Image 1 (cartoon, helix red, strand yellow):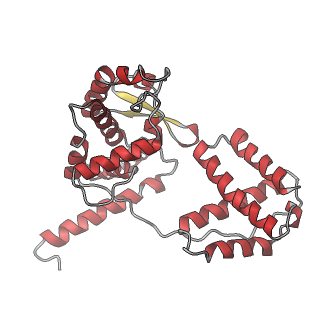
Image 2: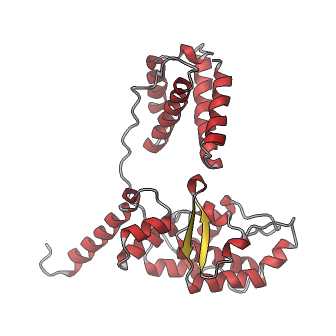
Image 3: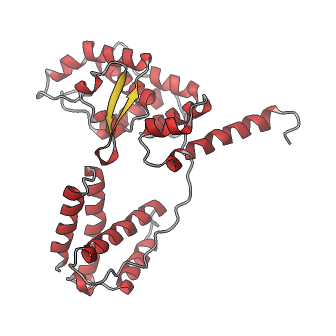
Length: 300
């Protein structure tokens, strides 16, 4: 099958039949678009012409690029290529899967960076409580830390998602929904935003059900939410790196340090496997080791 037709068929498959998120679809389109362009540059226009040696050469070129790609990016690229060729073989479009021997590089385990409780409190207090956008920003930050929501989940919230009292409905990866509790601090901050700020923001734009709105009344974007976090970190004079995922990492780490069961944290984070959640137990163990090493008289 011609490359363009084959790629369109695969993207329709992952969009309609597998129901992947828009972010994942965009990553597939970006990775496989680059792969298709590389194949065309090699004089290959049909998927039947792709051999294991061709795929090996493509991956080797990408791996040796300058600057070198991150291991996670290379692993995702290999996964995209493998998924495409497996689909073509499974659907009978091609007789063989030339990517069968392709194995992604083993990514080094990176422990998530969590803020201390003091740093989190400074971060949450950084937005101005006297300015409309400051009230909105504080509500967003409080909600992220109270629920462990991903930034994309928080900005996709509708006002109606708060209609369950002290719990919140989040839509995670793969359109999976989960219910998480909302603490009193976050609820107070969100209520202040809803009553004092959101009506004014909503009046500036088209009607939207989204909970968090921008200065012109449109739904708050992921990039704007990232800027809220970065500016709050600067105001709070937090010198360590703070990313959109930092409050989620801090949420999980502080729960485990407080004695929460890892299975409960798994449910709250929306992880499909407890193994993903257990990485946070390593963070907690490392913190215990540090405290022991600096506090016990015979630790060394």
